[in-house]
Image (cartoon, rainbow, N blue to C red; front, side, top):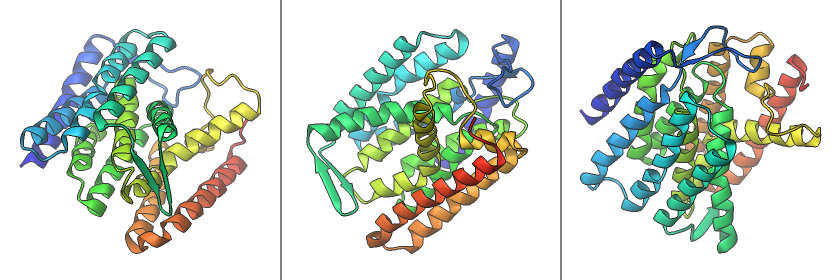
Length: 319
């Protein structure tokens, strides 16, 4: 019953928010960076966040979620609030970064820091791991925002990864996130009638970062990296390529692999389905291969993703 209730709440919440934002004319108007052509309500991610945080609060009072994980996730509330305000009235980048830093520090404090990071046969610990973790939370919060650029893309990634981790490890909290996103995705599929907005994309990246760090001392850490690799690889490689070309990194662009694939003629839905296909390949490999082979899997997927990026370059140049 809980699973059904979470999904229904997300559906009803998204419908309500779409109606309110449309009535208030809080719309995302197309610009030269957009992949849509008509003004569309934004802020649908608020329904995801309200539903997800309501679900984990229920799990907390039922003692079905580790209190450290619960409070770490709760540290994302300031990020949700500033992102919502930013969707309505754009806020200064320094303020948004300050709130991201505050939420990241709060999450690390709630987790008790990252004592050990287990990356297959490697083990790291100490202050540098926590500095890396802090930067990782901020980067995930931003990169997920960067990758929310076409209908259904960011939502389908959250849905897939949440379900995949539940199937692999029985993680009920990740399933709550998947169900919360699924209700929103009904309205965000091509052609979307509402967008996620910063209030959805930035906190989703934050939430995934907390999941990753919570599992840092376990083999699940690598699985999270593999399942989310399509997003962090595209965002990170694009940033590196732009930096090497001397571009202003704060300037808006349409150079991510998924954006260029769309520019090459692929529909929103086709790009999303291709991404799901790649993700299914990663999930199947994780399920079939013993943990001892996950390092080779990780290296292989890096080669695969780089190869796919070069193939996209042939369809639409990185210019």
